[in-house]
Length: 266
Image 1 (cartoon, one colour):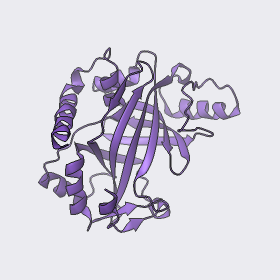
Image 2: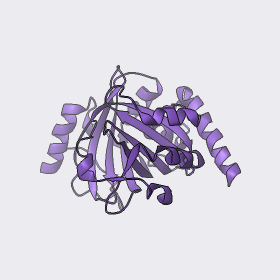
Image 3: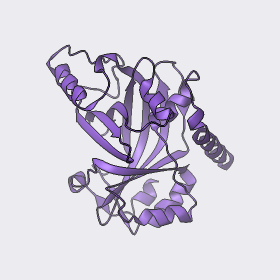
Image 4: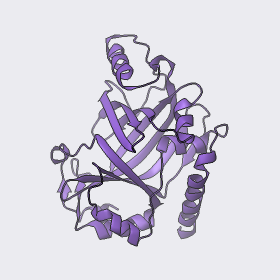
């Protein structure tokens, strides 16, 4: 993948600063690495690749929180609007860590609020984090969470962690971002079970409103169709057999089909 990405015009983090899209619409697509290679070939003329210190593939770590009864997962599984996620997102290569609240409203728009997560180490993560206002820093977290989260932060514990690698593309008009996630691996902190989705690719188109997008025609040509994919929910469904998953069955079958195709190509 690095060979293809090296042919892209680069965009720096400073140039990316005006493309945060914190209030946005998201469209996700699920495919395989072989189809991604074709897509990257097609997109070279319309997109620039984010470059951080010469790297165009970045490592990410995420820890997800939930209630003792998995309410954040259940609300999503049941298809309710206004659902929320709480996570720590770590940009491993740059050393940036954020506590983030994601809210998806009943109009399909995603809003993200975040603050620095001071001292968090994604290489040796603390799995015992509790938001109990135990010191000055955690009182700031408590204030942030009570402002933006509809759950009592004292009830939340870490349920899931994942690792993945991300490529970020920006269209040349700077009206959208395209994130491409590969090498997804999940570990369920409640059950101890793992899920390895290496070979699967999650593409997410992020834009304010319904701006014209060069990538949509390319995706259609490659028969890569929109498909919802929550990393937290899919990771949980794959690693916790006690969870209800009726509304995720079609997505889980899609994962099985794509991974089977990857296996046949190897």
